Length: 370
Image 1 (cartoon, rainbow, N blue to C red):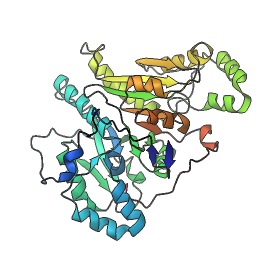
Image 2 (cartoon, rainbow, N blue to C red):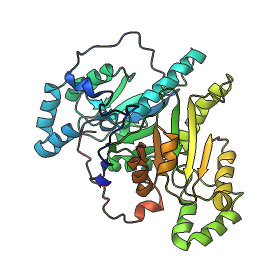
Image 3 (cartoon, helix red, strand yellow):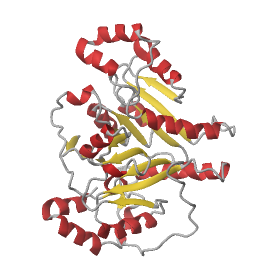
Image 4 (cartoon, rainbow, N blue to C red):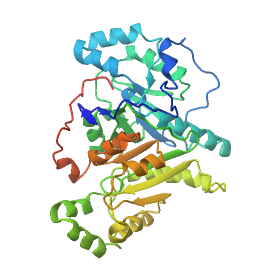
């Protein structure tokens, strides 16, 4: 598997996406065209200050490889012209599509239980596309029957400055540069990649998997491991097992998920809650797992399943879990998960980002449409 320009994870020719085990993807017919329409009887969007806001770029929500090639080879004007000429042709789903659909499924259940509550997921399309491209994006969203009412189209400028204005809890983008900028602003963010293989995922239960160090937790312990080795790391964790780790960049998103989980628990739905979270860590349970679990407890956060792999590959375990999204700070684990069909995101945070990775380079695509 290779990583192309920091944007594409290639994982073989056997493509299984969003529940289709056949050679024909379930959305394969969408390119035949659509009639622009506006779905009726949509629920009202929650107020941003009450919602859990997920900002996604157009290139992770939809598949836009051809359009991106036009931009890179022919420039912005030809790109916009192509989008306008094809604005009645829907884009295919991208790597974030199943995740967004799962968020909407959770919202449906929350509205049934709490009709007046605005504690819901709210998806915002955050893109530096020009407004002229907006009609194709709107038509595609309506075609796929997605509930996305909030757009931010910045016409070539960086959208990062708008993330806080939209009360963003999580930002997903194909551009690693923008993701780093968001993390520097204290916003949970991760880079998503286009994968040729995506396994079937649940349509009724949102599953989110997290790495521990430098994702949920700070990179404090990982720095000890990188600097002083395994034995010193184990000694450090044993000596500090009652001292909670500092928070990492995705802790706030787990916290937001936990807030919604409790709403289901309060209605007697702990065992069949439509949100399930996983800790998938390379830590060893006996040697360094205690501190991780005690840290979560000290934060008042629950994790539904904790898997301590003691350095074993994460891909096979994730293949069993079938999460809608998995966050890790190591490209090695991201690629390994993607090879087996898990939608894996890279969190460019912590000491692991200073280690040179052969064959992997981030391309600055800051001017490219997202």
